[in-house]
Length: 359
Ligand SMILES: Cc1cc2nc3c(=O)[nH]c(=O)nc-3n(C[C@H](O)[C@H](O)[C@H](O)COP(=O)(O)OP(=O)(O)OC[C@H]3O[C@@H](n4cnc5c(N)ncnc54)[C@H](O)[C@@H]3O)c2cc1C
Image 1 (cartoon, protein in one colour):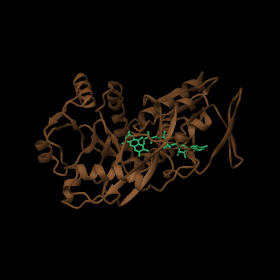
Image 2 (cartoon, protein in one colour):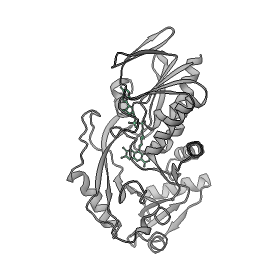
Image 3 (cartoon, helix red, strand yellow):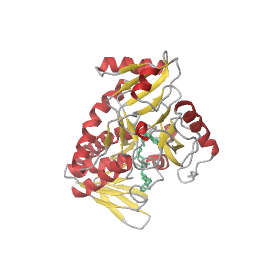
Image 4 (cartoon, protein in one colour):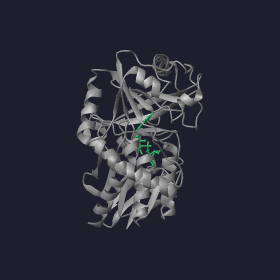
């Protein structure tokens, strides 16, 4: 059985890894180079967490984490940094309360901290007297670039072929397979095809396009001015402000400073026309969050980067066969929180296409 995976961001790379590991003849295609910076999966870090208001995702994370751990062991490098997750908000914040209820139901332990307790445990942070924090130890961050590269490298070790750069230009369904056609003139037949095209998926799959919104997101690194050890993963968890959804990371040892961003999808964008260079309007809210929360960080960004979200209205993921062509499966598994589940969603889309190609 021959299966193609088109689009090697986090989800496609994971699908290719699972296919190849199961002994399937798998071929991966990527329009740019593996690890490029024009999609959704690049950068040094992505949060993983059990702390969701919706128990579906807490359960999914419980399933995804062992898969990341297996990948890490096979890759022989650190992919997971388990520094814990700190949620900060007003004591009566509805989202915080919903997360606490979900964790209690799921039997997941957490600490509920006063501002003084946060400062004693994690000295870089400042909370308002009226704020509280939820600390959950079984979260942290994934080394995103390394995860994608590890999936591709291991897939190749299991026998997958990878073609990058090679851009899909079209496909035709035939009785004995799907023929993929590429811009280079190359064409190849497969028993099944996975489309993991991130922000480019709406251009290719019209049936799902009305549900998907592609937006530009900015994150920036800010300089550490105080005691460096206060910003290391041992003393600094990843953090999220409930409701406002500013979030950030400890120093991850790749880029200078610490990364801070806001989860707030903006205006729709064409993925091929996105302004890559962030400007003052992008940075101002992040600088305000830094000033409010971290007295020992400078507010002048050291570097800033743009990235794509592809979001559904309810932030759920779409993983399904193409209407009328069940041998093609596609996944839109972003909505700004999909990296942590990429290893699981890649497996799900791989299993879907394998069973369709067999039947
Ligand atoms: C700033 C930012 C912060 C985030 N933070 C978090 C976080 O903390 N935690 C978390 O869990 N998630 C987070 N996410 C979400 C997560 O990163 C995404 O869910 C995930 O990376 C989506 O991966 P993907 O494979 O669907 O898309 P992509 O990485 O965009 O991959 C799609 C690939 O398809 C390729 N492609 C497109 N068209 C073609 C073609 N015609 N031919 C060949 N190849 C093609 C593209 O070049 C691209 O490489 C964040 C996202 C962003 C942008």
